[in-house]
Image (cartoon, rainbow, N blue to C red; front, side, top):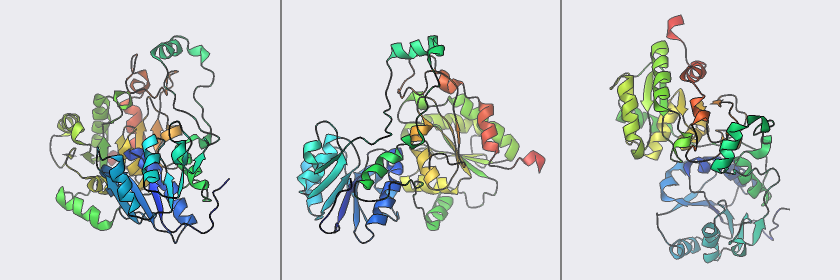
Length: 377
């Protein structure tokens, strides 16, 4: 049942989530909230590292950032100055519920979870169709691999299991529509022109493809680097494309290895890992014909900007956290048929068979669906 108000909320606070990919998956709920309350300013509280993600977003009027290590009382004081009368808490942590409580926001809505319900005025029960991402023990993983006949049908969640439905269900508690929308981000033409100038891409005419080989979550989500290289080399030979190698500071060594293997310097490859801001990364992804990536934050960003993605999935599930709107035919999400996947573990306890089972040839074939083959021109 939706929350009823004596009068529509005047100022709405949304407590955003803490990770890049998750933040992108909240944007359909933000759009539905804007649709429900078109006249109420919506402010979003988010970690400082994600503030720029929401720039130009049609559902967000103001972004409030908090620094790493910033205390609860500091955040509470910041929110109190906003005179909000409604807070929607998207994360499930106790802290995220305490922040609007400390700010004395009169209506506070979020999911019911341990150690936090007292801080909410409406604790929403777990939604029907929720599928938990349960991590098996090492013994369970080995048992699945040793006795694959015990697996009947594998992991087959319902179509409504995707994470974006979690956030849509919360805004439905405020009377908004729970019908899914594609995640949406905004980048201006001026931002694209600026990154082209900064990185010397203004006169590049072949297809520009991007490659993101890292994944913060852990090695169980990372397709082997030698396969990234093999797939990218094949595409280079067949299309005369230009590769942009992307990533954060922690990916620079990996990106350097890939860049050296693909041609070491422009115009064959541009190694930009560790050199871009979040907005510059977004502009480069919008500029790209497609993105070859692991299941990670930039995957979601690219899809939300309209750029197709090709993704080898290993320990995680495209049914739960895949890019874009579930079932979007623009993307190619590859999986190998192994009984232990998805396990949702950060590190593989056995032999990494889920990602080793996806070949560079399979990935190259998926990429070639989006770019012309120069040999047939």
